[in-house]
Structure formats: structure tokens, C-alpha cells
Image (cartoon, rainbow, N blue to C red; front, side):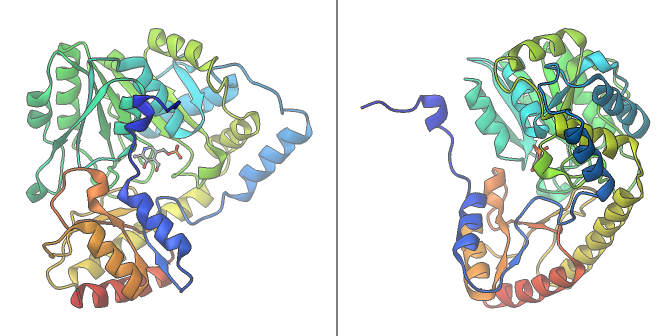
Amino acid sequence: MPRPTKRVRRAERSSIRVMFDLAERHDGDLVRLEVGEPDFDTPEHVIDAAARAARVGETHYTSNAGLPACRRAIGDMLAHDHGVEHDPDEIVVTVGGMEALHLAIMATVGPGEELLAPGPTWPNYEIQAHLADGSFREVPMPAESGFDLEADRVVEAMSDDTAAVVLTTPSNPTGRVYDPVECRAVVEAAADHDAYVIADEVYLGLTYDGEPEGIAAHTGHPNHVITIGSCSKTYAMTGWRLGWLAGDGHLVDRVVTVREATTACASSVSQHAAIAALTGPQEPFRQMYRAFRERRDLVVDRIAGIEGASCPRPEGAFYAYLDPGIDDDSLSIAKHLLEEHGVVLAPGDGFGESEPGRLRLSFANSMERLDEGFDRLEAGLKTY
Ligand code: PLP
């Protein structure tokens, strides 16, 4: 009997997906707070630029690394908004942040090597490490300090087998923005181990308190940092599948060679859309940013009003990592909330070894729906 490889068999369906499927099959009115994508549509000027490009025949393969104008636009934005300096030939335009991560992990982690991530963390990294025939290890961060990055704990967990550490800031699922000093300490330790830091900064443009600074911005070891970014979240462009990877020239050359045999290039039309998003009018994106920040404030207020509940303050992205103050497993709580109260949250156990009962709430939804969702959540937690 033929069967898929071990590396494919190892990938498990996450409890987040279980909730998503249950919600899709449900025929009542649900408030969906489990999904991780902006509820806004892509702004008109971006769509116009893509349509224009398609009409004038920009519908062919581009070079494997991406259109020079797109790489320049990404480089300028990284330097201007995040303090990260790269020449265009150190940047690869990818099929979303997801392909950028896949390429980065394939290029840095191999058999007998491991990828580390401070937890709680996004589940896809583990699957991607397995696809690279490597292993994955979560290094849990303490709940008492809001799951902030504590470099010492990561450094202690590193060994000769550590090939890369992924740092996600702002974090999915906690919304925390890691302290740059702690990030730099991890980069230094990675350099000592001849390892890489993969800086997953797909949410960096959605930083609400303070300036969004890239991990590669002030490090003495820029060659050890691979910066991952995307148009998906900041520019409301999830379906365009447009992201990037930026790193040292040698690594980028190898990555470009590999991707010649996988996706070849990101969509030409999406690359034109990205150029418009990055270099065109910014006001539509600022409006979305302000809306997310207002919702963040609403979420913090509403959680403070639920007896026994708490969450680390979301400083970026659009997630709150809720501790409902109930000692049970998170999937059971999430199912109760969906089935009895019509509100959908992602179970916290999908994000690693957090304490039982945590739930991830996405505030990529309107203020009205969020308020309604919180009414249901409050009622649901009372009756659990
Ligand atoms: N990194 C994190 C932490 C994410 O949450 C996501 C998407 O949810 C991605 C990367 C990839 O996003 P995309 O491939 O849409 O750019």
C-alpha cells in the first residue's frame, strides 16, 4: 500500500482548524473571532494597479527573485518604516509570508537540526521544520510576564543542534511586541552557535504602542537575521499571496536557486499590486491601522470587565490571548462557546504548551460584532 512520507504524516490538524471546520458547518448566526485575517478589503488604488498591469501584459513569469521595482519598494519600506537596510538583491518576493518562512526554514534547518521558538507560538513553524526533515522545539515563556520574550530562556535552550530560532513580533497568538534588547540577545547567541534568527515580522506594521523596529535594525550580526514580511496583514492583501524574505546575499542567492524549482516566482499581478500598496497613498492603510487600534482598546476594556478573565496587553497584530480563568482544556471551552453561545475563538492549545484553557481571540472584526461577540463570550463563560 503506497503511503505519504513520514514528514507529511507528521503534520497534525490543529485545534484551530477543528474550530474553523465546526464553524463552517454551523448554520446559526456566529460571531467569528477565530480567524487571523483583516476584515477590510484591499484598497481601490491597489486593485487598479493590478488590473492595469494585467491589461498591459504583465502576466508572465517574473525573475525568480521578483520584479526589481517590487524588491526596491520592499527595501525602501523596510528601511523607512522598520530601520532594516537591504539592497534589492538581498530581497526575494515570495508567495506570502508563508513561502518566505518555508524557504527560510528549508535553507537553514536540516536533518538532525532543530528550530526553536519562544512559546506560545504559531503552529505552522513546527510543520515547516518537519517538512525540512528537522525538528521543532517550543521554549515556553512565562505567563506571569505576559509571555514576553526572555532571551535567557531561549539561549539556555540552544545547543549545537540549533540551526535557527524564529521570533514572531508582534506575536501570534499573544499580540506582544518583543523587547528589542531581548531580541538582540537572541541574535548574539545565534551568531555564537552559527545559527540564524528568522524574524517573522508579518504583523510589524500593526504595532500600536511605540515604533515598529525590525529585529535586524540594530544588531551587530545582520547576516544572522532573516527578515520575513508580507502585504497580507498590514495592507489587507491576504488573498494576493505576496510576501518577502530579506537576508544576507549568499543565503538569498541559494534561496532564489531553490525556488526556481518550486514556485518560480510570486504572481506578477500581485507584485504590481504590492508596488502600489508600498509606494502609493498610505491613508487607506492608516485608517485600517487606527480601526485596529480602537478595537484593541475595546478588547482590553471588555476583557477587564469579565470576572476572572485576563490577557496580556496586545501591543500589536490583532489577537488577544485570553485566560478565561477556567481550569479546563481550551478545545472544550471553545466548543461550548460555539455550540451554546454562537461565538467562535481559537483554542489556545493550538499554540503550544500554554496553560490549559487559554483562547485566542481575533479582533479583525467590526466594533459592533466585537461587542456582540463579547456579550456572548461573557454569558458563555458564566455558564461553563
Ligand atoms: N506568520 C504569522 C505569525 C502568521 O500569523 C501568518 C498568517 O497568519 C503568516 C506568517 C503568513 O501570512 P501570509 O502568508 O498571508 O503572508
